[in-house]
Length: 116
Image (cartoon, rainbow, N blue to C red; front, top):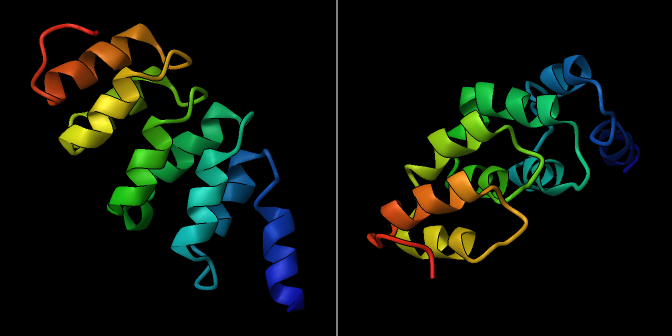
């Protein structure tokens, strides 16, 4: 529909204020937010806005997607990584595009001492 097309276009807006407003739109779906968080490149402030929005950051798939994006601010990724399932933490550990500090934190979440 036209509304979904407009929503898809607005989701690509890099301005955090636009994203903040969009995140409260009742027509927005979890899949929309996951697509937003998976974009590469994406402005780190856009990911921070999703992190600040309780409705969306409480959803596990959204949190996992934010952690897996190399454009996520490290402080945000580290906070979310602490709550990953062990299997997802292992996947982050094996992602060379992600910061070493995040990969090491995920090793601890997965119950491993060092990266392999």
